[in-house]
Image (tube, rainbow, N blue to C red; front, side, top):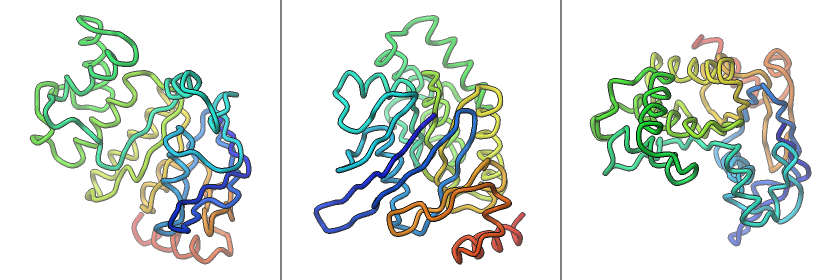
Length: 245
């Protein structure tokens, strides 16, 4: 699992987004992290994969310590953890197929026919094998998100971190992306942490819900428990969900 213990992270501007965050992400689950804008949700994700370094605390991924890890250990951890950025973060100058093949060559040394087979396999996983020769500029927003997921899972991580995977998408595409997240968890046995502001996305993907406010996890429990919580943010969030679902 991913284990986060008493993590603090501050920036030079005086911003202190994480002030003692503790959270467990059990293997085989999807933990959805909620919070107001600027509450530190993305900072938490980036700390899990070592893109940001906390000043204090411990983050372990499958027993390996992230905080203070040397380069070799971070490389080992990042082989286990995939990060799905909001935009999909595709290379605009490469085709879809080339975008997927790039991490295979750089991190696994896989090229040629094996790479092509993997590219097609993972494009099929996200339902877009026909886009292999398209450029990112030829894709819709939802397709870019799907391709971004495919590029992340092609290296076969054990964990996925999703940063606002449905932002800016219409309701139908939101549903498709959320169902894809569930499919990956069930079929590929991928453990996930999902940051979202979307009540519909949470409704589909969440096993448990963690609420981050003022740098701490103030709630952590099931969807039903979150729904019944007396935390004002969660009350409003779930009332919006009821109107949308």
